[in-house]
Amino acid sequence: MKDIKYILFGIAFGIVLTKAEVISWFRIHDMFLFKEAHMYLIIGSAIATAAISVLLIKYFKVKTLDKKEIVIDSKALDKGTVIGGIMFGIGWAMTGACAGPIFAQIGAGEWAAIITLIGAILGAYSYSVTKFKLPH
Amino acid sequence: MGPISNVWPWYVAGPLMGLFVPFLLIVGNKLLGISSSFQHICSIILNTKKFAASGYNALVNRWKFFFVIGITLGGLTAKLFVGVGNTSFLPQQYYSLKGLIFLFIGGFLVGFGTRYANGCTAGHTISGISTFQLSGLIATISFFVGGLIYTHLLFPFFN
Image (cartoon, rainbow over all chains, first blue to last red; front, side, top):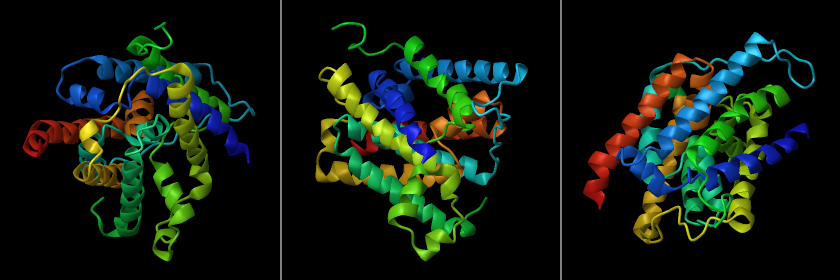
């Protein structure tokens, strides 16, 4: 069960999400209203930090801890990227939570987010069983 | 209120979040992503014949299931031990029948949409753009189109 260690990564990630209020409906609402820069600066600096790290990994040919070559999966671009993306954006603005923050909201005591999670699980299920009929 | 118990500023939180991309790559060759965890939960509690036929790869994504258990515990840790003050993360109105129906619909869109788009703000916006993938940029623009449509056109109508 070498995957269990990712609980520790999750705890750290969840603390950052919660302490920066990335899981706050109010912060997400103000982001979409362009009322405050907080979320934009967080997203922007997260991307910049990750991009610089990835460039350094490539430049120095950094290996994984068990000495394997680092492989970055490429994600396909198709109609789903746009249609699904817009659906997700609406859901994000409604619930104040993208995928990770749903879990952090529950942990931080917002029990109503359990309903968000049930919706998300059924949404993912519905996509999985209808995906062959959807435009991609 | 000390610096730890206050809201962490963007220049602390943003770079910390970004560092999960190299950390996860170096530790386990994993690209940061979260929304596949919804399908992983389906594979545990809703593993119908139809779902099994969808070709979800539980082995590849299992780590995300543990990651989101951790995120839940992280939210709890922040609340109990680091402190979030009296902050609410959801409007009080959501604690009503109408509000819970809203959260269910919104959650459904998050689950359906992220899987249809093959990623969320973690997998597409942070991981995708930082690894220079066009799909990450297009997805992120689409997320914002959706969010702006709701916030500016639908939200005033519902409230």
